[in-house]
Length: 216
Image 1 (cartoon, rainbow, N blue to C red):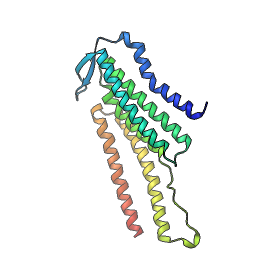
Image 2 (tube, rainbow, N blue to C red):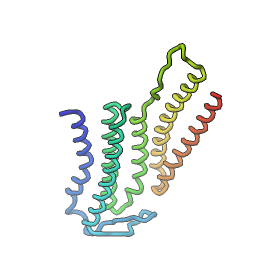
Image 3 (spheres, rainbow, N blue to C red):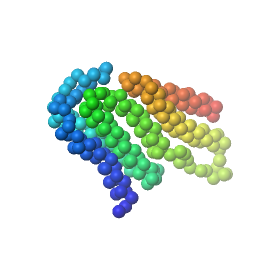
């Protein structure tokens, strides 16, 4: 059995765990389950187990469709090594499994876990995707010594430095945002993640402009 097939089977097993969990607890679920929560995390719409299951299946289908689109893109990237594709496959499968269990748990317990904890999983996934899908170095072509232009060399070095710094900052900012999210109210977690990334983008853009001016 090839490694690719093993990874695919493992990812299918991960994404299938929530369905197995539903099957195991189906007979113990209450007859009425929350279908929707308001902005305060209170259930404001209820339905039967069948309606709840239908909503859950549709949500999982859409999430899995997005995951397949991403993996299709990743598999077409020639700069990604086989190991990176394996890790990305497992990361996205783990994210889908985590979100699925949040959806199941909030229906069973009547608590808006999906709204509260999906931002944590999302930005944690984003940090992992950047780390494993973005190469540490830009594939810059090396010039022969007698064709070297000092200005061009400095510009390429600055591009390389900005690329490495952007990758590092994005990963660490998202990890820091995830840590902060754990200690803030659930309704503020998306704002924390988005604001952290906006500040990172502004800071990196300012640094990039500064380096370009020095080149000129």
